[in-house]
Each structure stands twice: as structure tokens, then as C-alpha cells.
Image (cartoon, rainbow, N blue to C red; front, side, top):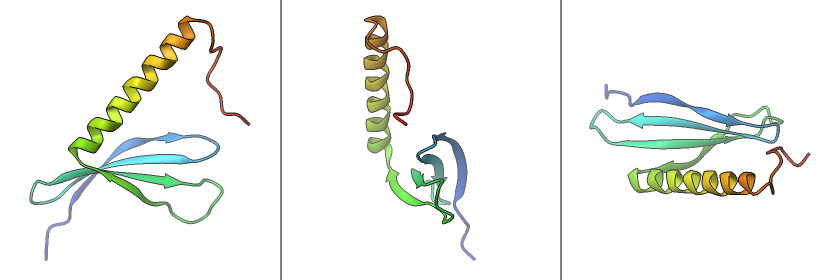
Amino acid sequence: MPEAPVQIDLGAVETLLGNLQFTFVLSPEGDAHIQVYAIDPSSAGKGSVMMMLDAAGFEQLKAVIRGADGVIDRLLAQGKVKRMVLPY
């Protein structure tokens, strides 16, 4: 019987409107990727894999988050953002 991949829960971003769950997957051969699950909390069904990130995709995700962090910090410092909240 083939060895199952190792899956490590990396955490989630949870809001009232939806959740993104991140899982690190490592195959027995040493290949790895990150799975991103999108879940609608109003739906009883299980979320499905929205995307898989290889090393390049993960670097792009980190760059997007760093960029968003920089924009938020700058706008907070300029007094343009008072708080970060959902629009509902």
C-alpha cells in the first residue's frame, strides 16, 4: 500500500463571509505544495481545494501579503485608514 502524504494544517483566515484554510502537503517522494481551501460558512458542504501553490506560487502569495501590509501601514500612518473591518 502506498504511503499517504503528510498534511500539516497551517491555519486559516476566517471571516463572517468565508474562510481560507491553508494546508502544507508533503508526498512520500519529498514533493510539497500548499493547498488553499475556500469555505463558505453558510454552506453545510465541505470546501474544496481552491488552488495549490508550488514554491513560486508561495513566493507570490508572500509578496502580495507584504505589499498589502505596506499599503495598510502607509495608509494608517497617513490617517486615511481608521480601522480594518468587513463592509457589512
